[in-house]
Length: 453
Image 1 (cartoon, rainbow, N blue to C red):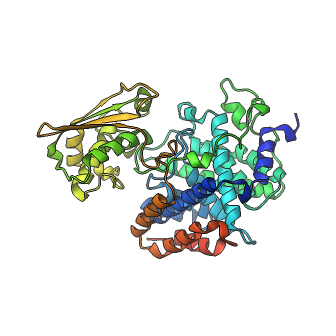
Image 2: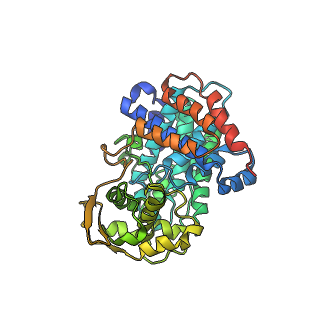
Image 3: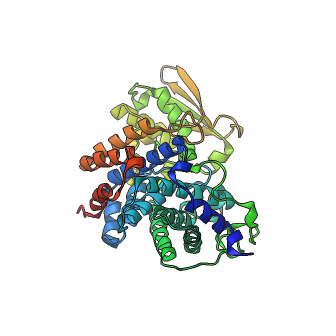
């Protein structure tokens, strides 16, 4: 078997030939939307003390790493339900950092093509590795899939020929890593995602410097896909087309809430049932939640949660937090800060949570959840859940430019760096017409390089 017939080789050919003319208008808009949202998350997350800690650790030597931590630290980085990975938090920081390191102009068209290539690689590698099951094998999907995906995307960003794109993917595969034994606060989950962005940048740099990996770095028994197969063995190269199938970027979801995505559908339903009513927690008699067994298997079913990790996976805690947020500020969806260590002992949340009942009896293939809300006066309202705002699996729920622009504005308004956000919003909106993205992106680089304490 030669390198030209390998999986990475065929992906390299597809990446090398990918340009704006080959993309549909919907795909271009999706790329802009995901880029805008990730930039907004970087700006909003930049002031978090955990980002400052990482900034002190790596200094200004690794902007991709710091930007990735900032992108993921709020728990709102985009999410692919199929691969259980967060592609944007890997790809966007890596691509931005690589563009800024370039001595030549980087066009907006090349940035869009690179981003689409990266999402497509994430999706293709995820399908080939059965990434939805990686967690069960102790492998962190964002880190496992992220390095080769970012490496291939960066090679495309700089217009590298197919052979270099192939080598970038292969080198990235050799750097692949990631475990799911996270700390209780899940700091290491964010760090692993950030390291994937940083390692992808290095893998692409090695490929562009002429380093050549094994042409079977993906499919061989000791390769990325070969060793993830069960039982481990060589993967037939003709059976996998990493760049084929559906356009991955359009199916990646935005996270409207910072907790576990399996709870997003019932969260969205409860918020709709609450509406504009700022009900006192004592007015809630009972919240009955129904989920599928598959969703329930990934949740924390004990109570009370002992860590933020458990709180984010607790249906009782998450839904109770919606009620309390709606009571305090009139917006049950404003859940930033609802899963901090300090909130684990919130008396109002714990009181409502004691009246949340969870049943795992919904059949697979039907509604993703259901909620029945009973008030103290005996009245009840109920609704089934089918997806959530920003759910990439449903075209009617996916976010377009308008929705992403609103969230971007809200994210930037929460920081003192609004003026930087305005300039970057304009850059992304007209991205396909931009001759050089570096001047505007340098504002973001300066922002994440400045120590806040």
